[in-house]
Length: 161
Ligand code: FEO
Image 1: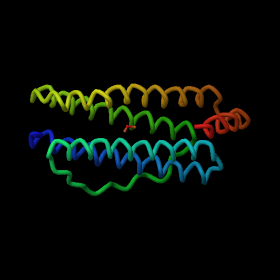
Image 2: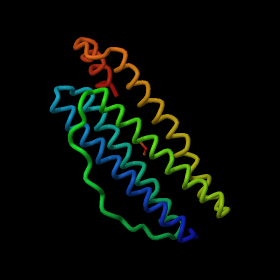
Image 3: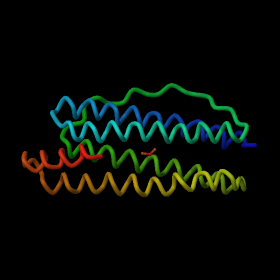
């Protein structure tokens, strides 16, 4: 059985993951509007992954005889500036999510909830990957700057995801 504190924080995390999905979907729409279909495709895939993250937690709370309560998902921004700015926002967001996951893990440790710790391990590892990928794409974008042809090539590459 989950403690109330852990249950509340897991419910908050479901909301945060769904907001992530919403944010990336908004970025996808933005990239479509900016004629960057590869970036848009990458963001759409990312949004799907975030729903998957939310559902993992949804299932875990239920499996532990907890109670999932869904909260309102905030409206994401719709304007993100340049492609570099989009990925700066991705990295910043993922760092925020990492901090939330670490706080969740710390609470599971404090409460000696070993099942929650084992469950959250996956998210700890996933966040390393999320930040690494966002950083790699951001650095590539910073390297090519506003050279149209290079951005075009990068867009093609991201379409492969
Ligand atoms: Fe669910 Fe991108 O972290």
